Length: 191
Ligand SMILES: [Zn+2]
Ligand SMILES: [Zn+2]
Image (cartoon, rainbow, N blue to C red):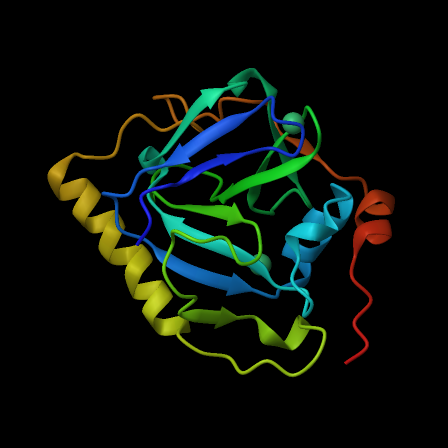
C-alpha cells in the first residue's frame, strides 16, 4: 500500500492527509444521496461511470488538514441527512460524517481510482447505480465501522476530530439544501 495519502481540492488551496496507521475500509457507494452531493458541487469527475463514489471509511482523527482548513464547508441534503463536508474554495468533496461524533466515523471521499487505499471491498446501494453492479462486502463495511469505533473508545485514540468540537458541535455551521436545490441535483435513475 502506498504511503502517499496526501489529498487536495481541485484548486489546490485546501489540502489534507489521511493517516496510513488508522485502519479503514475502501467502499464504493452508489446511493442517490452521494450522487446528489457531487452533482450539487458540480464535481462529476468524482463519480465513476456507474455513478459510484469511492469512500475510505475510517476514524475522523485519521484526517488532518495541512492547508486551507478555513475553506471547510458543511452541507446537508435534508434536515435529517448526513453531514457532507467539502472545500468551499472550489466545491471539492472531502468527507461524510454522521451528525454527532458519538460514533466516530468518517467516509473520506476519494477520486475514482485513487491509489493508496487498497482495493474496493464493498459495493453498496447498488440499486441507484447507472447500470448493473453486484452488491458486495456490505456486512464487512458495517462490522469495520463498529469495530473501529469500539477500538477508538477503548484506546482513547480518537482525537483530534477535524469535523466536531469537543462539545459535539460541528466545526462549521451546516447549510441544508432547499428542496429545489436537492431536486435539481438528484440523479436521474434510468434503471
Ligand atoms: Zn479548492
Ligand atoms: Zn452514498
